[in-house]
Image (cartoon, rainbow, N blue to C red):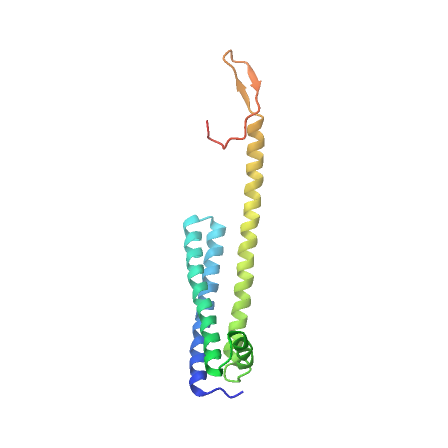
Length: 161
């Protein structure tokens, strides 16, 4: 496939931007992982915000590539996706396409690992709450005469009156 020089130049720029965004996304996922392991709520929040910003950049790159393919070939957006697949075969672009694919796979794995960690942590927290709430239901209290009484609590949050 022989792309016109202007299209090749624009596509190269978009691919370079996408590659940089994926590198940043991977770095943010690693920051998120460290924050999750350390239990640092503010760092987790900051990582999620940055992850969302980078994800928007990646979505914009994808839109721009489709727009370029559609405008340069006169195809519809759906057909433009097939054009992009063909452009991936362009020998001068093959290395960057491969780097992008590899980075995207690494990002996907890191994001899945972070999600698994979060789900595991949530399950542990839920188990701890279940134990605490179960214990709260079997509280031993004292009446006015100092006699112990087993009372069953209503399911109110801990610390509520």
